[in-house]
Image (cartoon, rainbow, N blue to C red; front, side):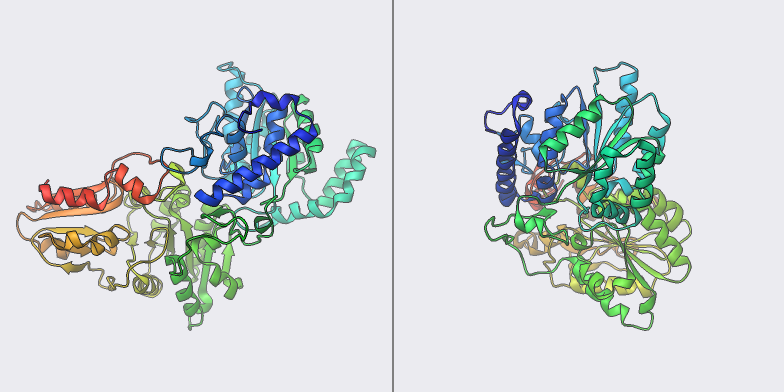
Length: 597
């Protein structure tokens, strides 16, 4: 059915046809993600909802905006990308997120949470200005995303625009990456439990109905803002979905449909997952549900988590607080969460809130450690400047997924983090090379410093057993020569393990401390020395740019050759593919050294 499918076919399909289509889509999604990895559970949960949206509405005239857009696999299969779907999340394939360059049906793209309602506001304004032929504007937002401040700002604005109509679909699966937290999530749970209230919808006058909603559910966010609101819609029942979507289509006011879905629906291991391990998956065996090629080596977050568990047992351990925005499993901090639940704070999808909380904790003598992906910490740039660095708050940031990130494309890269941090005075920036480095760094950050610290590290396992960090913040000289390669993990790992590089007449230096730079080492270099600075971040704010700035300040006769990523946004692909494409592979480094460029 999918192979020759056209979006217009949906209009003629009956309920049994739609059920068969949904089965085929699920099979395809499971098959491809089992080979390529990807966001599985979230996509399985919205199959029927996505089909129903396209049956009732007319994309792309009707603007369907997916939040976060990692759950658009069904949408892609319905809108002409079946033939390329096997190349999902591969180099030169299709993105795992909505991508405007792929299809006119991808009307907005985002890899970060809670942007859909704000984006929809812009489409409504363009509709009023008659800039484009725009029909209905639909924001599909997860129940976890609604709790983000950006959504509240957009809802507040929309409530005052009574002349504009938006359709908001709350996809409620009781999960973000892992289980939702917070007051609003609990109130959604009340809605799930009190299904018997649905009987009153058909027989009760509207005022009494609203009163019953308020007292039974305690969720009056949407109705108090003046939106029509329908709750407890079965997100896997085509008849019910299509009925309510048609109601939304034909109303004249902004409306919220609260759709209940099951994350992972149709694949038992994903359905039963309560931790979030099936949210984003590597390749896996479909029959057994076992992940493939899983290394037993730990990731940096797991190493730091174990060290924090030890720290929690110490004299100052009761002061420790670990903060995480809905990604305990992904950052490897779930071990600490399990052992010290009262000292673990999951703030949900609310990075800015977590940073300011950490600031005031530090001011009151607590020791906050904030675990987050590099791409998501971008959202709290203002708070890091205003509420952390400016007042020298002693907060430790453990920043995962720094540098090039495989398969997720341009929205999830950690290549911009140093450029962001470098513009902020007062930050100590560390980059561990090994497990012993990570352990020593977190101890140093907690006990030896009194200001903000960033410990950044790449996604994936720890590969080296080499101690490079010392409390004097010096760089580690591995091999001496007149000219040097300077790098840090993961690029340093490649340098260290390259036999060809060791055979070149060039020294090797590991820089586990990125800010402050080791000026003592730089001042010790021979006149006319060349430094090859090899890293996987963009140039502005890179270690190379910091070294060059120092050299120019003191008019030193030292050349700096930067091997880093040009100012750009990088596509999907494996790390080695992306390094080759953007000319930051170890082979590029060797070529530059040999050519003396």
